[in-house]
Image (cartoon, rainbow, N blue to C red):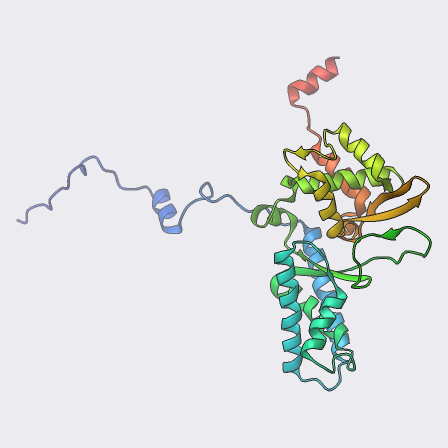
Length: 301
């Protein structure tokens, strides 16, 4: 008769795993170990699909106008333009790139670029590639010209009225989780406050009124803020990124400045219904719903 198999230490009271536990082990960690990722907003998905399709159509239309250039030459210019956009985004995040800078890259690599009207075609191809391959939106921004004798834009706009900026097409809730949560960005908070003030002042805010309102919020012009740092520098950065436009006014008391919503701000918030709708949504999201006990107390009162 064969002797029984030896029993290891501590195995007398060991129980066989249940079917449920065995199944969990074979299938990996359960839902408690890895929280489910929320579904993206359908509006975000629709916007990304629309932009990708629009850029595809534009690229096809522009490609039909290109004469005397091989596919290899087009791809080389496309890489140059995309490389410039990515390098600028890394060096100066959210600062729009003038169209002239893209044109210079194209003409430097292809001497007949001006003759064959390659600028529009390569930019259209870059917009399609960014959206389709990288999930990024290469948005075109325009700055309206200022009439002579009126206020003028103070930042350097030598590149002309067209600018391009890269934005993510990742759905908002995924972007907050995996890319960057703009709701935690102090500079973003300052921008929203300034856009609200500009709206309340008839789309134009004087520098004097701006600092007066900000001082009431504890933000002083020549003091270092514990979150924002030098606020004057932050506002200059918002102007550089074209979230704000700073205009110089010539008056009897000397030069003064006014601020307006810049093309980067209006274009970025357009899919959300514009600045007014975006601000309304911010207030709606910030409202705290009363608990059941608080609601009952309010009814009793």
